Amino acid sequence: MALTISGLSKTYPNGVKALQNVSLTIGNNMFGLLGPNGAGKSTLMRTVATLQAPDSGSVTLDGLDVLSNKQEVRKVLGYLPQEFGVYPKVSALDMLHHLAVMKGITKKSERNEIVDALLQQTNLWDVRKKSLGTYSGGMKQRFGIAQALLGKPKLIIVDEPTAGLDPAERNRFLNLLSSIGRDVIVILSTHIVDDVRELCPRMAIIANGNVLLEGSPTESLNALHGRIWSKVVGSDDELKALEANLQVISTHLIAGQHEVRVYANANPGDGFKSSESELEDVYFLSLARHAKN
Image (cartoon, rainbow, N blue to C red; front, side, top):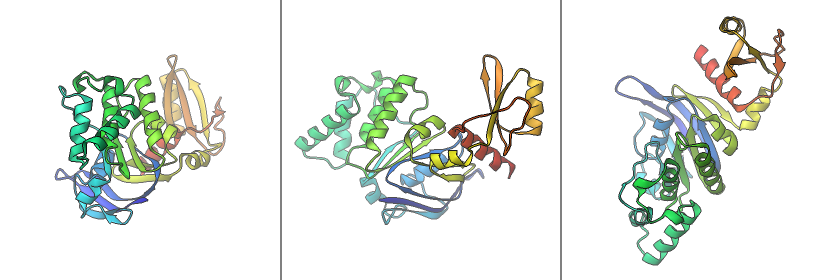
């Protein structure tokens, strides 16, 4: 099973180039699509999910033309969009049954078995009869995954699923995603670096509609080995001086002081120490290089 995206481009009427010749090949397992807000991630996800057409390019799923066979694709697609609305007065149990019928699961005994299993899998069984309007953000996201899993999809797309979740709900949701991402294609679109680091064997970084990097997080981290240096600076003036003379890729506040992370082939000196490369370094360095071009 493979999803192949070739030369995908999309420009909106206001002139925004949301996608610029995007090409990716995505196989089974979790694939992270990482980028800042406005990078083009949601446009790409909506296109793959058959919700909008590109200006040019092609998308195939295991040989099936996604752009011209939308109904066939939707039979094997599970989708959790960034803005996922629910009917607030309907229970999770009733809503899943309704959506299952829409997916073509009309036999009641089969539907009961599938819906009950999904409620157990997403840890919503105990609250299955409560109205969706009473659910927390994390519970709504888990319900979103439950509805996306109806019909045993071959491709699952989740767009910014952990934004706004507290740490406990985020962990529950990521564990759930990990459990379903072994035998199908799961695309996780996010701006949260840790989500990709924890879940995805392969990833791509996208910005301004361009793919900046594609590969495995491990390979990307190894490419930066021995080239990340850090130090803590006490003043804004010192920080500005470093930014003017070195390739600063990120800064973090620690107890009111700036920890500066720098990319360099050799130790910049002046108190810098070698630091283990992190996926956040890969991300910020990719964005910085793109901004210079």
